Length: 306
Length: 252
Image (cartoon, rainbow over all chains, first blue to last red; front, side, top):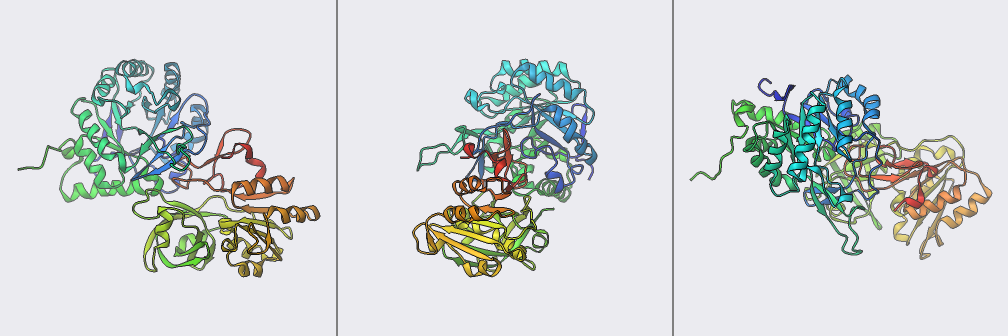
């Protein structure tokens, strides 16, 4: 279908449905269920310079309409990704976006430079928002200055499209988005997980081994829609919305709130085909209303009409 | 290749402490190997699907044997023939079927589930099954297993069926006199740990359990400590592991 393509900086995505980082590994397993070239792109699991073993189990806990996770950004590291996983992804024809992580600004920059120099990596999503449980859930995306400083530095390290992934664990997400835009980001993506916690009342123990965890799934969707709305009204770069999208209807809500593209995360766990189903649903919706994607982006208005 | 489909419920039968749910899932039944599992959606309220070993395969049908322990499994018990539920599978690596005579199988409680199909497929090797539970209510269908096994040793902690005590006691006696080609195991981690100590060089194939979100490798939530350091995913690196690969002291 025409009219579904999306521009993020110099990158053109064939459609607005992306797979969210941390929810689809490096594409190998989900690629057994769906054609990765059929969707807008895949944002692979967050990568540091070195491999990380991640947090001890238990790492996950089901919550009403969602789940908590404390995986701890386990991963194989950027070099192993490029050697072992990227060739497979390139064969599929997928648009590949690397979620860039770092324990320090230096590390973020190092990973970004490697991505910049590697063919087959189409864009970078700067993970300024993954809650670091060891630091009481802190991340650079909780602070305007830290966001500006980090995004500016990475902007100088890469010519590839740069997306800043924002944390919802703050008071004013629009101001952080503004900092990212001022620092040269080509787009912002939001929201990462909300910090949460669950406790076993028989033992008093927390349900995840690190205490806190990141809450995802439909439980967070209204928060995400609201934040996308606030950010889209503030910045002029594209907004990539995510947070609990599990059907095409949810996706339409995000577009109407102002998202130019969306990411599908936790729902992949339950239905590995869901991203294709959502893409088809979006197309059918637009066709039935004789609209283009651009017609509905940010079209929401305060209701109900009187 | 795993399939995601809406499976029709054929039957829900109580099995003492457990329940057997039989589903029509042709593509899964056709491809399933013993020791593999399925993710079963368990109510609109339970956000995540639940992992279960596939117990039986019969034509187009598969069945799972489980215990009702919470909202998801309670909902599965309340299913009626003709209802449907979403199923993803078959998943995981499955058992390696050896060819030596008298393989040993060790099952604790609902850990019997993956062995329904295994014993049928290796009956020509005359397997020896050690089957333990807390009470006789946890020893289901011993007559089925007797048909396929050369020997069936039952233990219960309260002595209400078979020999009183833990199954690891008669297993220890057996292993003093016999060296089986392989020990298959499924059950509580403490039991498997003890079996791992007794195995002492014998090849082991243990089916491990963990809380899972996806069941096919992408959430990285179901890890156990394995290998020299770090973790492995139970869903896709397992659920079958060799005992020597697991760092038992780190296992919670």
